[in-house]
Length: 256
Image (cartoon, rainbow, N blue to C red; front, side, top):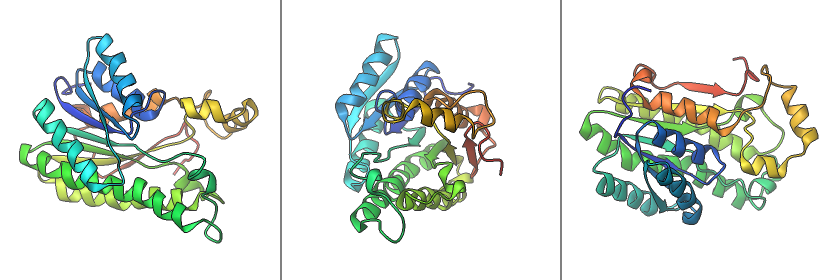
């Protein structure tokens, strides 16, 4: 991709085998200097060690996306460590059994699950934008990518909090594109479909994956590297005229 060499990026949610982890690796391969940030700092460090072993430039940072001061500290650390900030990928989500496993429907979802999901997946993304955008506006350039989900278009019968938070990102992304656009800062939204992350491979059956394959217009299901490639494009000069858009990366499952 053009224009990524020596640029600085944060990937907020960067565990090994995840979309974020794959994106850190892809951006480093493109020549970017990357901060791998995750609630589990040891997990982020494992990704960084892989990048450094291949000769790339990266650093790990632990943070809690649901705490504004923690996200602000992450932004400030990045600017100090690498001298600036050019790109931000918000991808963190709490997909633990105690959270999304209890995310049912509007009639029964526990309010603490609802609030925590909104805190992490919507308000947390706003925290990153709030503290990254001023640095990018000052530089006169930058790119932000948020992560939604194709489930927003499917209207699933469960996971109401997750769908609500991911839907809210459409408005947040368009708002950010408007605020930043004339200053050279773009903001877009990627919406993955079924992606065979390390967690997905561990928690789903062969039968589930076979049934899922029948729902996509593709000969295979998605892998984290598919999303990483789209993020790299949106960060690059090749994506310079793409702003405020929602891009489904789902193998054609949703034709909207």
